[in-house]
Amino acid sequence: MNRKYERMDNMNISYVKESDFKDYDGVIFPVYEDSLGMAHETLAIPFSPLKEKELFEGKKGQVHHITSMGEASFRDIVLIGLGKAEEVTGHILRNAIADGFKTLKAKKVSTMGVFLDEVSDGLTCSYAIARNSVEAIVMADYAFDTYKTKEKKTYLEDVTLVFDGVDDEFEAAFTEGKIIAEANLLTRELVNEPANKMYPEVLANRVVELGQSKGFEVEIFDRQAIEEMGMQAYMAVAKASSEAPKFIVMRYKGSEIEKTLGLVGKGLTYDSGGLSIKPTSGMVAMKSDMGGAAAVIGAMSAIAENKLDVNVVAVVAACENMIAGNSYKPGDIIGSMGGKNIFIGNTDAEGRLTLIDAMHYIVTKENVDAVVDIATLTGAAIHCLGHVATVAISNEDSFYNMVDSSFNKAGEKIWRMPIFDEYKELIKHEDADLTNTAGSPGTITAGMFIGEFNGDLPWVHLDIAGSSWTSKAKHYTSKGGTGVGARSLYYLAKNYGKENA
Ligand code: BES
Ligand code: ZN
Ligand code: ZN
Image: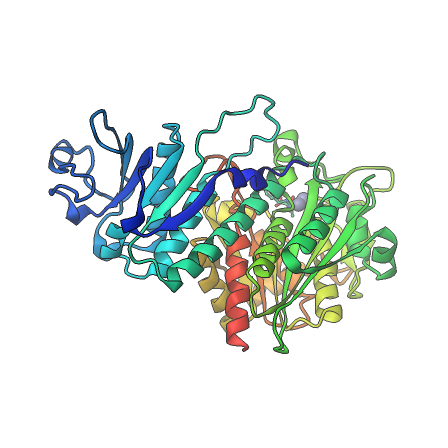
């Protein structure tokens, strides 16, 4: 497997104070709507003609490129609009910088300066300025082109954030932002790798390497160990594949506190649907059915690299849902590690089967105190919120609120659905304890099925079937995997450590 995101290293990103700035081939200037009309100090460009012709008014989302032919020290200038100063947020800045970065990179500049002093007229906190700027640039500089044999010539070598208010907060946010943005790219890359290159063994080996390089412990359970632990539901899904399943456990101990956060990621490196086979159109993107696993792996990497004061355990029941003579079948009744029997209504509802054994394992064997599962679980999640937001359900308000604010901090949208008593009947079956096909509302009942195995701990279920994938590159996202969850779960771990300190 190729490691595209690591090749980021050929673009160096750093920061200087405004007084130390050098000449750059191209510069990015953030501009507020209200500040227009006067000549910019550093640029000496009068904005009013641009405003009169409605070419650039500093509005949110506007990007304007100027090539300077004269004596000016910058060849390419990109103005980015931040909207009204009193309404600016970190998310607006992040999107604007990403747009400006892509525009300027396309002009084939080698060195780029991003002038941030103007930003503080609206966004006053240097932590937010640094974090959102570095995140935008690192995340915007990615495209999945690993398998394009014709190498694209790269011109961009150096990006410098230029800001007079560089202080300890700025420096810390710069380091943190860079690490979590890279974790987002790692997550995207794991999702984008096709299933013939990224199968359970490859994923497990990659996690072992990441554990060594970032600083977390990894344990891999093979087929025999998985069977010995009694993970019958996971094995029912995994057994028809000629690729061996790998149960991946990641442990990070960064704190003396008693509490441990648990993360469970759906790790179907491919989902054909099994005997309830998907049509080809539904199958082509199913390399992405390990988006939850990729998110927890990305989060663990950033948590360990930033040495957070928290304890986190993450697990992934990696396997493929395939077809063979020994496939599990619609109509089967299978067991599970937690002891409950499950009626199989549809072999394409496989994710929840792997997740309940992973969930039972983490709550009974790893002593976690709260648990989040994250999964590309249901097509219905796309009907709920499109590709825009993650669908959540939870059994506990205060833990949910912590997850919610962590997603907000990362700028990843999340929406909580209810668990009404009426739905509880839907996951039961007359011949077995539970059924894997509970029906509408499918996203909620799928999550509730997993909730049966949470050991009554504070729990949040995240369905990222929509939010983990996009068919269009926008701002700092690229086509394919969005890397959703990696940064949000990082912030969750950070908050969880602080809350329990
Ligand atoms: N991996 C799919 C869900 C999915 C669909 C993710 C589209 C991303 C995009 C999951 O395993 C699945 O197939 N779910 C079924 C469940 C149904 C059979 C109860 C679904 O959503 O149709
Ligand atoms: Zn499926
Ligand atoms: Zn699936």
